Length: 306
Ligand code: MN
Ligand code: MN
Image (cartoon, rainbow, N blue to C red; front, side, top):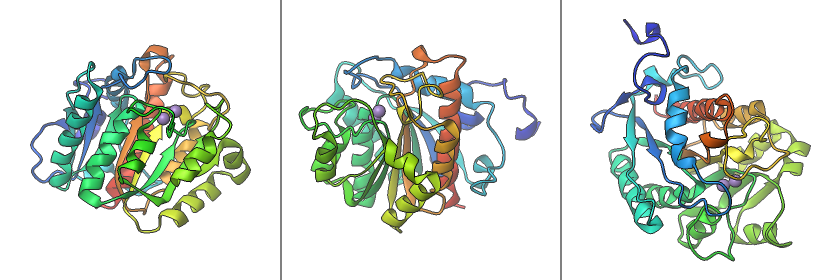
């Protein structure tokens, strides 16, 4: 049987039925699971089960992505690398394992699509990508700025202020999209802006519309190497209830799909999808959306490798 005729429910749950291997010979792109949620200290834990849930629900996905113009499982050589082994009792050791593990792939010119895990994993992921590419432009979909400077250590509310402090981000091209919800203090958005973030609050996003947001991002990023980080809580909990810190009043599924597809043609050198928490999911709607968004991110990243 050829790939297209294998019933979707069959086989073990790798991402989109991709081959699971650690042999990187001729590999263009890899899915990497990062089942770590010890950075989710603010509210509900459980995103350590995100990669498994996304993989399980990605098995239905296949075929040609007409929005981006790629058949990601055919037009590039992509694998499921498996998971990075993290230590739930030690965030620094886990961050080191993530950076080292992903650098192995980047050094072999493999592009990486990481599945979280909570958002703390993006700090070590940016560290790995900055080592390979230099400071990267950053597109950050989230309802939270994750730049909280009152917290000095790494957890899921701080990865970006630490990544900026350590020089991993090109702050002339850092866009945050969808920010909303109660804030830690009245100056919270200004704190993120002072670090260099271009903060698009949700009200600004709805005023602009998704096409104008895409134009804004494209203009800002230009031809820089850009990393895309997508916190599933940027989407309204009506569409994505399975997450640790839901914030009402967010994007629809379609709006997020449209924005991610709109990144096609940018020099996307890495991406992650974080904060999918199957314990609070219903009918796997969040995991299905997460799998589809990962498919879109992989399409956008893979398009440059064809
Ligand atoms: Mn986040
Ligand atoms: Mn968030």
